[in-house]
Length: 264
Image (cartoon, rainbow, N blue to C red; front, side):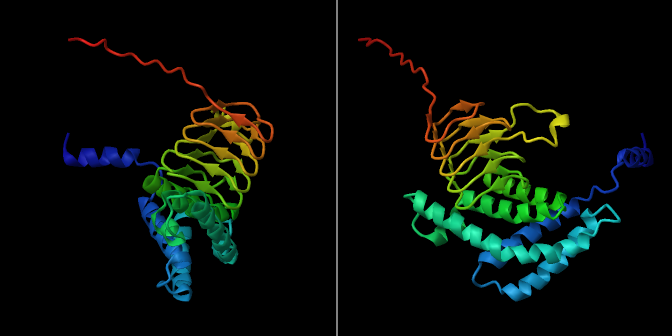
């Protein structure tokens, strides 16, 4: 097969006119600039907001495929929410400082904690998602996922003072609801009990009430599953039914130790 035939066949199968990977790269640049604008003391807020608006218009040009949808107005609505998002993130950072005895300072939380970074990008993406501009928020949280190992869908609803310790392997589904002062440890999954495309418009992921702690590698599944306030879910627990307030749920493994007899 000659080169021209190969080119012709490739072009034939490149059938997605809106698939521009430049959108992914530019979203990552936008995300980094947004994070620095909110937190870095040496980054000028006014100048960066102007630059962010320009970058956002580029994203709109690539990602707004519906001609009649006013994507251009999203930025003006979104920017109004940034002070509130920053306020929430400061509460999250304080929760990290209060919950982790290994934390040395709040500055360390902002700069070195992957759980905080994942939450920050989620909160910034979530507000954009609510404006009806879904692809860019999804790319933002996937960027954070790639860097931290934490996969938070931008559609999830998460309350104040949220803490994720160690971060890696945490999965929070699109319709999950997490209320205030919740603590998750590594490997926790808040997922769907069933996976089927016809469930798209239904609540598939659990609700976690105030002051709940979920320890490492616990799995909580189902849209009808609610973990009542002040409850503790132990490590490796598998939960598919609601738990009343003030409960403790734990998994007891069977541990067998086999020793080799002493051989002289």
